[in-house]
Image 1: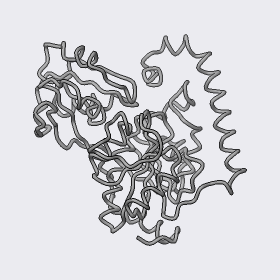
Image 2: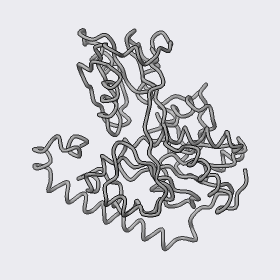
Image 3: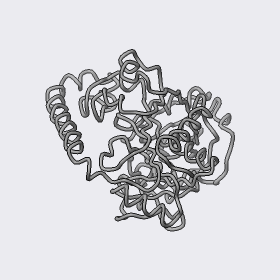
Amino acid sequence: MTRIWRGEAKRARLLLFAPLFVVSFLYGLAVKATERRWRQKADMIDRAPIPVISVGNITVGGSGKTPVVEKLAHRLQAKGYRPCIILRGYRRKKKGVFSVDLQKDTHETAGDEAYMLAKRTRLPVVVGKRRIEAIDEGISRFGATVALLDDGYQVKNLKKDLEILVLNASTVQNPDLFPLGPLREPLDAVGRADIMLVNKGEPDDTILDLAAGIPLFRVNYRPLHLFCMHHESMVHHGFLRGKRVLAFCGLGDNKPFFNLLRTLGAIVVREAEFEDHHHYTMADVVKLRASTDIDMMVTTEKDAVKLETMDIPENLFYLAIEAVIEREAELVDLIVNRLQGHCGYEN
């Protein structure tokens, strides 16, 4: 589907246009009905005893919101808050509401993003389908003073004090709703944001008009290091320069990762694309390691957590990245001021 949305599979889009259009139309009706239903049930919306910050998007995957959640969690911690990261735990096997325990949980029990965030941040990460129950767990167990929702823009049954929208400017050049396009909801949902972070291009005039008056910040992603999974050792990302690389990943949008490797000097001789949240098997690993004309295989950290328990080839690395937010201090001050001044919370 991603290739169709990017305009790379024009024949497939032409052949599938009619059924995709019908499903997209019905999906749009369902989105509007859900929005209308929750407006009518405003008194049933959950309200947390601590401020709730939502970080989300309006597209299907690939917006880069999770590194933003990680960055904001650490910045709020530095300001004296005790943040707790809240996720649904997509495709997790463990039921109920629970905090991620790195000694007991895996990417399978907790979900890949929740497990990765727990590893990266070493902060409380709580998983639960109903977010208010996860927040209550974060308060009772960790004394959380602020909740950060990863992927919370479409959450309707919880009062949010701040909506931060991470917008992939290049993706929304296709304004169609899923599955004809990548949008989870109509483009005018941009106007619901309190703060907007834009990556992967510049917003067009339509987006700028919809976001008029909303503070806008740009976010980029920079490499931190390479990590050799077999030897559990870290090397500088400059190690990529001149290396023949098999790049693989399963993200909402895989192309930016491949392009990043090229900007770092890698000679990407082969790209292996998997679906978002792909569950890797040994068959995948065997197929990948069959390439003999490469120096190394490189994947993302999100994909790497799903390979940890397997027989890892010696030349398999993951590239760790971090979000870089322009005018970051201004953004953090804006968030803190909104929480204290407009929501009435103190840390």
